[in-house]
Length: 370
Image (cartoon, rainbow, N blue to C red):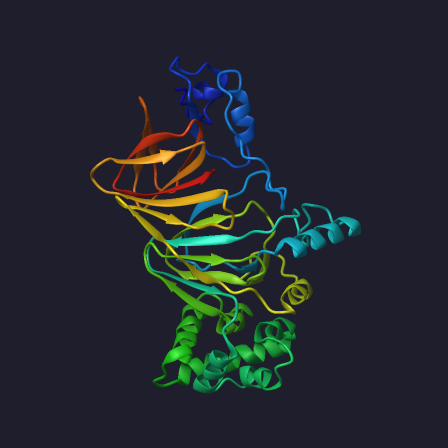
């Protein structure tokens, strides 16, 4: 087997030297989705390695990204467009001549972006929109005039109504919400959830439209090991906790609240005018020996979570697997070659399917193509 770790230091770069003369079955390299194809091409003279083909519907050069999220500071509320929205938006901005790097560019590519979150710690996710019955309970329990008035007409969703508010209307609704949470007594159900969400966000974003959106958004609570899918076209953010995110390969992300860049309210209204697809909990299949399987958005993709304790754990990898270590350092050994993984680090194995040995203690995520 040829197993090589690339490194950024020129004197140690595996790209400039011949790999160790071992039986060639695959490559083990640091994972960077922006450069992995070029890296594999450097080693093509030593060993041809399988590379996943672009997805038929999206043209994405690689079907997923993998990273650890820490929501100690909640990230922006954002929306990844679905396939038709992304294609239409990209073509429209190209026709208008909007530069690709412009601050007001919404669509960097034609691709949708599904997102799957797997909880490492207890995680709270805000996504989609609550059912009307829950919004009515919040409006009544917290005595929110702005929410009650929008629900009375029902000609649009509450989220769309918030996105249409003028600056003055937004400021007034934020004052009403702050006053309501400050005076509220003992409440339960959706009203209690919404009050807790507002208190969490007010400390960081006291005058942000995102607080009003958060009141309307569905709250999902995940225990460690549980997973949820955030479909394209669904507003979402993370309130607290740590999770591993598996996402489609796209840079399309329109921010709607708690933003650190351009917010296009008109485009967001267009994307949410007919409602949003809703998030949902995913089934997690326990296959034994500390290993779980989590479904993704394509049958060609496989995600496994492996809890590694003090004893080494065998796990199949290949023909194309990205391995991420979380909640502790880990090691991966394939035949005679061992690589160390710090928390959050990722490596790529490309080659003949083999049984790797993982060491911990750690949680290890293996995302593979079939």
